[in-house]
Length: 444
Length: 170
Image (cartoon, rainbow over all chains, first blue to last red):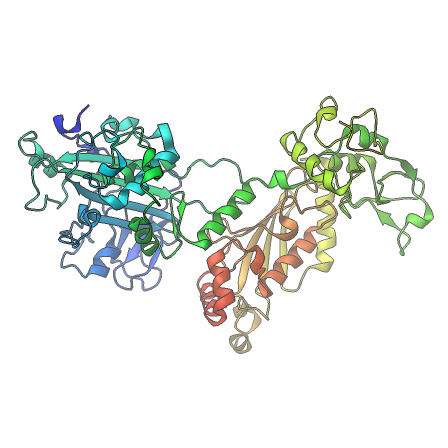
């Protein structure tokens, strides 16, 4: 489907579904305070003013404060949440017009906004004089240097294409009905070519936004507007499993950016890398880094050491099980010696307890002793060893493995925490049940 | 929930009542053993403390409204003590080791699943929490920006922490 042959679909008319887990942020026009609506309601908890507003995507009262607009937002009536989101309400003429870098000229506005802690939207409009469909097929690198695409963006787009490979969908595929688009991602492609697209003006009306085509834009120029949101989830140590509200798919974010840059989708000229020398440092990266000083993170990309640390910690949190020692084989647990509690096993006060159930033990009671000489009720320690091959006190394992084999055993155990006796034989790093703790652990 | 877990939680509660860290109170519901509500005063030597000068001027009852009281929730998993209890700050607190969201999660040290061992007791968890309010564990921070604040700009950290106490810890 050639985008230039079809009038754009008024996709932004569709109400934007409220995402699960979204919390309304409130903003006070009196004192610029911000808070969560569900915590403090509509009245400013700081100054008690009613002159407040819900911060929404596309309607961020903080912007007008910062820019000192004449335009006063409709504070009297709070904007209905289910209404169509105003698209690009702050269109401004391209401040970069006339700049040397062709890439900068094309990007008329690119806005990153933090709408709530950890929640971002990026909105941008890009004017391109290159049709996404019209881009010539893989060109020889020498010609590439003079091709229509902004030179500096070639490296990024190639790089992104390599990352997402076949998953990349082009703008023409994005022109599909709204329901096929992933949530949180909107796509609009418009054409400024008045000859082929007489409905152009009407469609802009339909958006209701103040945006207009900058004067002097030649026919054949395509305008892409995209909106993408990303929810950066804080770590949740209580529930590290899959989340109901995932971060926007990497693909969506990248596709949005790629289309904005006018790069044709699909298979790419990989020879670009070989002959074009080092990939040029992309100005966008610096741009992003400057735009995101707070947390240096956008979707799945990070731009600061701190943000990277955060992600790594998060990944480690989500995989804690692989850190923990695996279970001990049932046969080893069964082989642990039992003994009766004797006088010398009692503490200084003449009493002792099983440290797992905290029940007091009496002389003569049968307990199970680990190789490290710590003892417990058999049922108690068996339940623990069934999950972790460590002594609850000193963390020494009951399978007599040398240090370097321990890691192996842990790795194997993590994949099957409920490994029954039938599968122990195959556990890497574990000794075959029948042979017990052989002297040579390296028998294969 | 296993009877082992129930028995142990009851025993721990009995033990706790004699040995609670100062300024802590456990609200315990026999009908629901697995959830303990804890009210804790900010330790005196921390920025989370009740403002002492103010405290001098008021009697003890009004002191209760001066802030510095944090609500925590301790939830015991069904397979306690084989899994660690889960600690959440119900009161917002500006602290590197407490997640700055509506959960207020704490996950460090003995509370980590891979670090937990059954002989650990809730009472030591409570002591850990109190020690952390006095001295955050920067190397194990869950909120790196707050940790950074603590490391590089202690005055600012203390100020924000106190502001939050005034605002939230009533």
